[in-house]
Length: 100
Image (tube, rainbow, N blue to C red; front, top):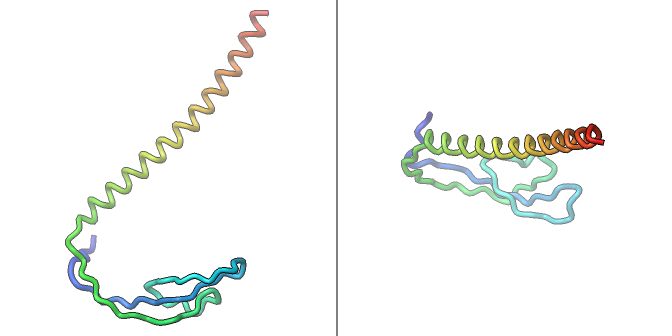
């Protein structure tokens, strides 16, 4: 993984943004020029210098992926629980018919 530690010069693009389906105009900031898009009007650019501290990027990425994995497991466990509940309901109905 690339090491981003140190000083970096960036150009920030500041826009007025309004989508055709929205009546509100919002301030928007990006690191690339979006002025060719009809939804963005470039207001100004700002050159800045950012000092990035040393970061364990690989560790952050692993932590993020583990969190996502946990979320997926929880979501799918809920779906499985719903399906299992439906199966148990159907089996209970079948058992009731057999007892009659």
